Image (cartoon, rainbow, N blue to C red; front, side, top):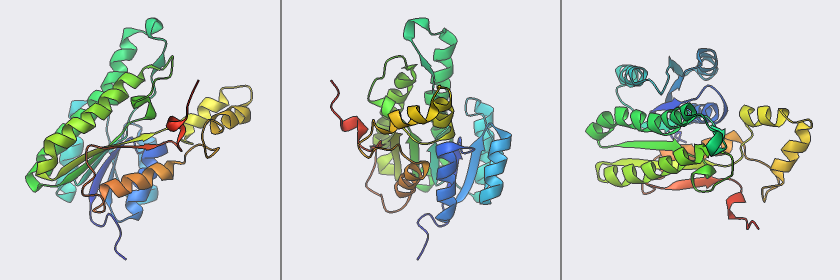
Length: 253
């Protein structure tokens, strides 16, 4: 049976850990040539070596890095079939207590960098009349949790960007979709739980927020990305797929 992403070339940003690493592993497992773009050289190199992928150190907030990443990928593989915009960071504040620099940091990393990456791969995709862009958004992109400003603003914008670009380039064979994970069991989540006096109790509290009574796994996000990047999803475009175990459907008093 042919691998679902056989011979596709994918750039995955922020693939040195967590969801990005899981996506990279799933893509390699399904036959893709993967380029891991991460600003953490140790993490990126480790994942690339483990998966037999290509690592290119990239700060996605740096235009020169982005241009070098895309140019190097095309030089080596001839094209970019898939872009996964995964790099990002939680930036959580009470709005009136937030330093203005944190707003700039959040928008640069969680929103503007995604457009910069898309803009960089578009010429190659448009020339070939094919391509799939997958933006890793968040349930913060359509729901608001107090004291998490301005992260939801950036993620709302990312979902809007997904829809706008998906409509704009659909006739040229380019699909743009988003995945919005909820609570996922990543190192970032474990580090957050570890900051409490009883980490196990805090994890249990998070699990009980979800109908399946657990949080999500990185590979569950990864396999959704595989589906969207594959030829199995040719008519899914400008869509946002939520992966949160149904939590966002719950009624809250």
